[in-house]
Length: 222
Image 1 (cartoon, rainbow, N blue to C red):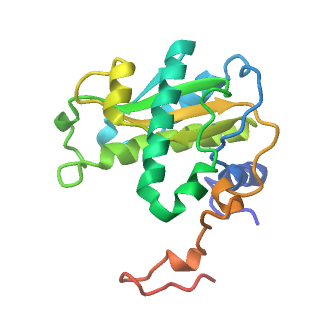
Image 2 (image 1 turned 45 degrees about the vertical axis):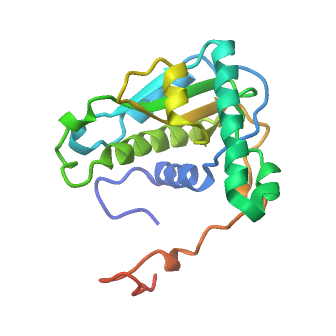
């Protein structure tokens, strides 16, 4: 049903926004081939249009063009994958069967980091300094949705030692890498999140995460 708001997009565009949100996937499987000219720039522009607390714009993107550097980042991720498996205990073997990244197969690899000297930005962060990470996460979500709308897969990899990744990427002291983004063409998008398909976990019903007035008092959605 078309929104009654005079500021609403046309219904087809509204449907497209919700479809991109619904069908966005954390992609690990890519097929060979580069992105089309201009696509990566559009995705980064979408990210840069993301909301940021105090308009601090804490995100920085490093495009990894060197094959040697890409291989180095892949090794960092693989090292952490093994350490994570050890920390998981009983689920270690199950975890090791999962495909957790596509760094060597995707068209583009980006390292996303938070800026250094973030303590200068106190607007909206005086009591919650982690809002810089929240802002950068919104930027990455914008990137993800723009990529999905153009039929391009993206995956957020967080299995790495931040200090080692910062060093190999020449990031300044005080900055913080938060994501390795794998971006590229896909044969198909997963019909559901990959970790659901692999039975690692499943998405909770909305009713379990929506409360009214106090924590735990569930709101009935009508």
